[in-house]
Image (cartoon, rainbow, N blue to C red):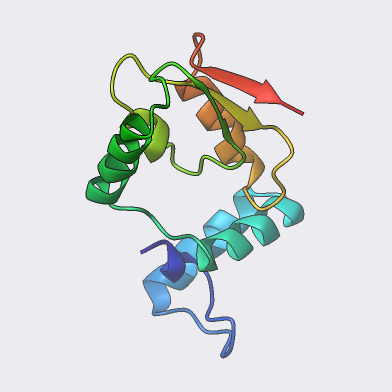
Length: 122
């Protein structure tokens, strides 16, 4: 669905007139740098299913990684890996310089996962 907010990179056309209106509104709300970043990351964003995330956490546990280990997450995206970690969850270090992730997502992830769970790293 997010792809529809941007014109097709080949044709330059939106899916339809409604999406064009929404896409132009989005562009008006973001700086040129933020819009370019959102465009790039939307076309390359892939979301991992909860089943795969759960399996990865179980594999880490079988490998002996402590649940409260510090984990580097250079670009947490929507935060699904952090949110679905078994309790007590890991302390997650998220890179503050992640140019492939739009700034608003970095800010939101720090707000959502604050309180000792998330540490910002330079």
